[in-house]
Amino acid sequence: MDLGLADRTYVVTGGSSGVGLATVRALLDEGANVATCGRDADRLARIGSHDRLFTAVRDVRDADAVREFVTDSADAFGGRIDGLVNNAGQSRMKRLDDTTAEDWRDELELKFAGVLNPLQAARKHLAASGAASVVNVNAVLAKQPETRLITTSAARAGILNLSKSLATELAADGIRVNSVCLGLVDTGQWTRRHAAADSGLSYEDWQAELAADRGIALGRLGRAEEVAYAIVALLSPRASYITGTSIDVCGGVGRGIL
Ligand SMILES: NC(=O)c1ccc[n+]([C@@H]2O[C@H](COP(=O)([O-])OP(=O)(O)OC[C@H]3O[C@@H](n4cnc5c(N)ncnc54)[C@H](OP(=O)(O)O)[C@@H]3O)[C@@H](O)[C@H]2O)c1
Image (cartoon, rainbow, N blue to C red; front, side, top):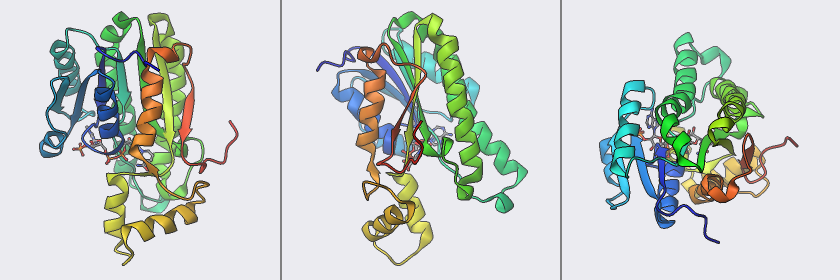
């Protein structure tokens, strides 16, 4: 099936690693133009060059820098932006008693600025697209909080709520807004935690223990490409009647029925 993404332009934040990188690659494979950002220039450079790829070193928390990035992205590809993937970010492994007021502020800022800064910067381009789609990369934590990730769980719930409001508010401009809610996906987030845990287990054995401990129905962590598939499907103009919803990509770790 032709997903109708070729020659359209998509902005993916945090495309130098994990889910963002897999999404960048999937979109390039579909013939789309892609713009992406991250904070580390070396990591961005490792994506490699491509005539339909634009990259810039930007922090999504910096509204001015994001505005400049989005303008440059549109300029790089004929003035259009057809979709936005708000992916950049990371989680904060802390319980209530370890969490400072600064942690709460930083976490809420990252999660909300990570959606609102790119969206506000790209809004006028999206409204002109005729087939605009925004995908917010979220977590099952939004619906199933974990006390070991207390700030991230609360911020994720807020972003899921915000996504619903944005879908309603932006429908008049022809902009669809959806979310993907991740369980545990094998990316830099988990390789860093494996290194920090210093468990003496190989990464494979550590992952298998993790999957069993967290009760992942499919018995393994997800792959970034498996998430990118859902993101690309939601970006596609073929998903033209899907807005205001979220898809769990979590191997069955989500226990909710809604
Ligand atoms: N992997 C999981 O199990 C999991 C589960 C639930 C939700 N998620 C969410 O999924 C998204 C992608 O995570 P991932 O697992 O693919 O992580 P990852 O491999 O660590 O990739 C994160 C990407 O975001 C970029 N980034 C981080 N903070 C940024 C900032 N302030 N401004 C611009 N770019 C920034 C990183 O580049 P730089 O560091 O160079 O900036 C990198 O390109 C995140 O929002 C994460 O919270 C992941």
